[in-house]
Amino acid sequence: MLTKLIKHEFKATSRILLPLYLVLAVFTIINRLNFNFDQLQESFPLLHGLILSGYVLSLIAMFVVTFVILIIRFYKNLTSEEGYLMFTLPVTPRQLINSKLLVASVWTVLSFIAVIVSLFFLVIFPGEMHEFLRVIKDVRENLTESFGSYGILFIIEIIIVVILSILNDLLKIYLSIAIGQLINGHKLIGSIGAYIGINIVIQIITTILLTIAGFAYQTYANPMDIPRSFFPIMILLLLLLNIVYYEVTNYLFKNKLNLE
Amino acid sequence: MNAILECKSVSKKFGNLTALSNVNLTLERGRIVGLLGPNGSGKTTLIKLINGLLVPTEGTLLIDGNKPGPETKEVVSYLPDKTYLPEWMRISDAIEFYKDFYGNFDEAKARDMLARLQLDPSRRLKALSKGTKEKVHLILVMSRKADLYCLDEPIGGVDPAARDYILNTIITNYNENATVLISTHLIADIENVLDDVIFIRNGQITLQSSVDEIRFQEGKSIDTLFREVFKC
Image (cartoon, rainbow over all chains, first blue to last red; front, side, top):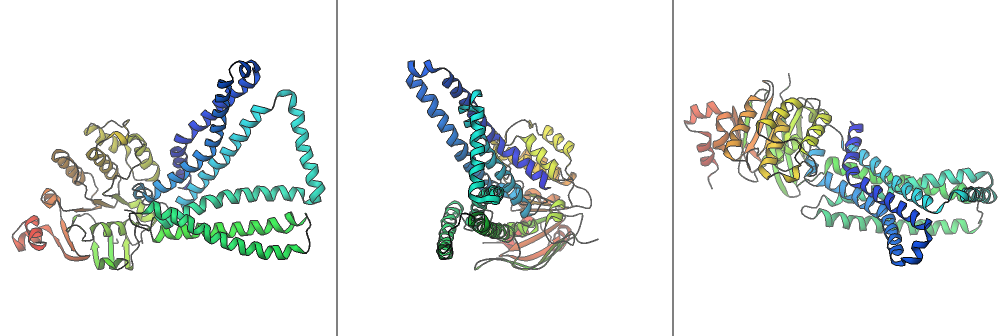
């Protein structure tokens, strides 16, 4: 059933999100051509500027539109009248959340990849490929220099932190919506209020934790501590927070669903 | 065989408001049951509890011996009193959706009923009138071979001709072991198809009886009885 939910989730979201990729692709190609023909820049500076700003806008839109569409989809599909359809399917609320979380994460990662690929395609010319490879090599050498044998661990930890942060952003919004839907007639305002409330609580906790951490790390400032203890603690905290967000969301949808 | 629906001392409270209080109710298989009561009497709350959209504050509610969950949702076919399908879908998308999630969905039957009502499956739901959407909803819901159909105000927004077709669909399109629970206040229109009636008022069941019994004992139609019992 989870696979079916995921399939239909992709179907419903790609309808709006795929055209975004098409727009980015078109702007990327136009700008690449634009760069290749220097005459255009000299003879039509206005056109050149328009093409470039269109490209920048499409890069921003890639992130913003993806994020907004994913939030609207979750809100509308589960807490509006469509909720009558979704919550009476022979699936558990957990499966509903899982399908949405997975598909939303994939779209978020894809939007990052699309932007990176586009930028890469735009600025890298065939002759400069070795230059690019050299930069990568430099980064690797710097990592080994700073973190020694922990260089690889450092990279793995960064990837985990990025993934957990994406999940964290999404789950925080899911929880806000699950709380907001409890308020009859003001679900949207309620969700926004819940989001602000959660952020304030997290802010307070983080400040306290950072203050404690500040004291603890004062004594020995060693770059090795980043992969050895700073990142592991951060991963643990993110994981803990994600589990709390997820479980409370699931509890609310299972026991306190309030469709109008 | 378990009763298709069994409510044992079911209560549902929303804060201070009691929507259902101490409901004891058993529905047998193979019956068409009218759930009748004025607005705000608890009809929709009861139907939402059966479909797992609400959780009882007290008591237990069993469908074929199981608490509401994925297994019961597989055998209960629910028509909410809302336009619940995503507006961007075409009718054919909605058919695919039902086919994917419900093993008991009969696609041929749905397409046949659509053709009968001259509804083109390639049309988008967004472009349909309210009454037409209700027809599509009802066709999807009745095309499932379910054990319990819960129809919440199924004929409210459609014209009398379509109303007849829909009622006919309801009585001819379900198997003998299935029970149909219809909530409505348009009693005169559905009276003839009902086997049993349940009167509900202020969250309490005030009467559960077969239609024949009422006609025999009281000597009046359900519509007349309803108007007397719920006189304002």
